[in-house]
Length: 350
Image (tube, rainbow, N blue to C red; front, side):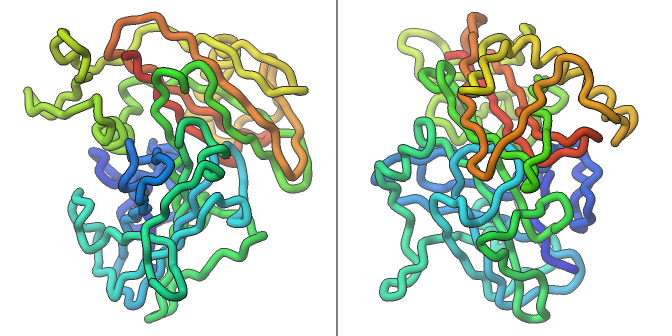
């Protein structure tokens, strides 16, 4: 198997260079750095009426693959397992050949395939989001899933609409569920939570992360914002810009814990700080011994959801200095601690 979407492309010490699954590196599966939006305000955000495409870096381990197709699915923000049928839009791109390797960290590299709306008359055209598209998300934030497959030699396949994505086991698939929250989206960011197809219980773990888990995907997402720039000052440092009468501010990690509320409708409203404390304990236990959990554990948020999932709204309280970052993951897990998918949120204080 040669084609794969490198989960940790661009990270120092990246291990996903051959597409081996299960992935053993530190980057979350839902934070694949090979997938991004082009044309919007950020790599995972767009606007009404803005010509938009999805770009996907396709890697090849071994020999070249010819006549490669990439299917890109634009999804409303979600955590958990999902199928192609849930996509807000499905875009498609093509490459005559993908040569060995992953190419250079450049959006114009030949390994990066541009995915567009495929019109039967016009061919590939950018996706121009409508208000109906935007109504399914918060402030234009979207999650992305991509699937690559080749005709010669045959490598990978399309994903039928009712078949769940399998980014855990299939290297042809990748997922980038990450959003930068600032301004209004800090106060109310909505996403869907899905559990196992059989309706069994699952846990929604909230897990704060810090500088050690801040990698290329986060960096590239931040620098795609209009109010963040990279400056070559002892390495590429990131700065918050655009504040009237104020010098640019270097971005730093917040030293404070996560605070706020998670509203799950009929499943109740929950304190983010408490959930993050328990989520950190779960994360540490799984890091020490994967699959170690045998029951849900005290304080975890254990849920059940039907096919339509649950609607979650997170409101984050931030009161520290401008330029501080605070990030956390919402992770859906089964009783043994196996991840069923997640969503990464990176908050930026302006």
